[in-house]
Image 1 (cartoon, one colour):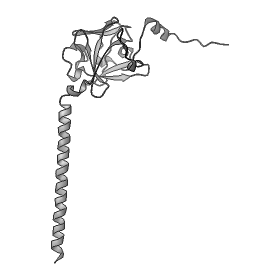
Image 2 (spheres, one colour):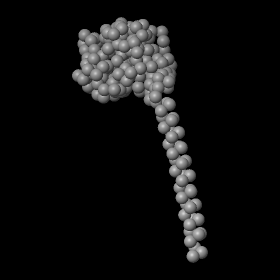
Image 3 (tube, rainbow, N blue to C red):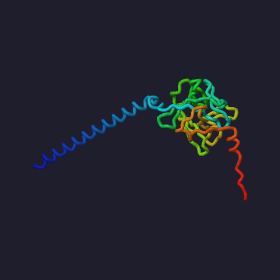
Image 4 (cartoon, rainbow, N blue to C red):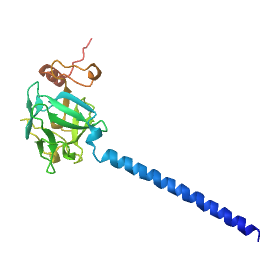
Length: 207
């Protein structure tokens, strides 16, 4: 009979330890939820860590992407500047026209439009770096839908694009007079001569 009180005390202590452990885990999870809610509720607070200005050279038209208010095309001359805001995870970006102050967005029908407010997910694109040194921009909201332009420079619907199409391939170019040494190897200067040279296959010299 003398063993019963000691066993009862042991069980009580055991339950107390479990109770405190449970309280601590609930507090930790609550703190974690608070952290997630505060740091993801307003992604703009953290997303725009880096802003760059460059041009997007279209492989299809041989010209640059330009944002003319609500209309967007790839017929811009050298000097069509874009303001690119880097998202939280690096490859997520928002693209805005430096002059028009409108963002490139893609609606649920896959239509590419310019909007003055770029905070919606429809205005976020993910950079995909391709093996041919080009960059593709896929919608962050509509998976598999790419930003692309036809030969006339008009935007293609996202639902009609794939990563392999030349219409969705772009190259970043520095504006004239602006060269960032740290980004020197990430940007490519393209001219008509270099485009023509790529199409020519080198003839091996025979001895």
